[in-house]
Amino acid sequence: MYVNLYPGKQLQATKRSMLLIGLFLFLGGGYALLREFLWLDTFREGWAVASGALMVLGLIPLAYGTDIFRFKDAFFSMTPDRIVYRLTLLGTETRVEWQQIQELRITEHIITFILKEGAAIKMRLGAIQRPDIARHVSRSIHLAALEQGVMINGRKPSPPEPALQI
Image 1 (cartoon, rainbow, N blue to C red):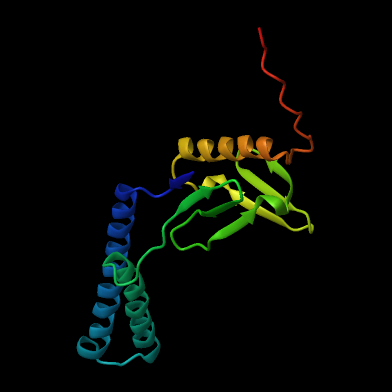
Image 2 (image 1 turned 180 degrees about the vertical axis):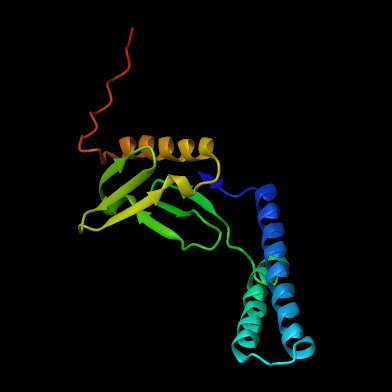
């Protein structure tokens, strides 16, 4: 199962916002720097450095907004062997093998994978943009954990009952 957590419309809106923020910072810093050099009688070094830093800071969102730097895909992928996900466009990819999982703690907002070596990996469902997709991911992990026989919220899943035969 593969779910794209950031569809095209949301990605375009994010790029547009980054472009506008970058332009605002870059042009605002540039105006302040020009003002320091050309229009004011006294030169203030601190203001000039701050204006230059604002311009440089504006270049980063500008680069993301114009696709010079590319956002990573935000996704959720689950196979019978592993779970792989990246919840944000700038986040890191997390990979969890089903064999490593000792227990799952599932709440409305967080899924915690408790590993056999004692470590815990938290998956924040609030980082997923759409609540319906977050519920779908949570239910899918829950059902897969039942199939894998992993303990969920302190309870071991019961074996499936045989189908009725007539």
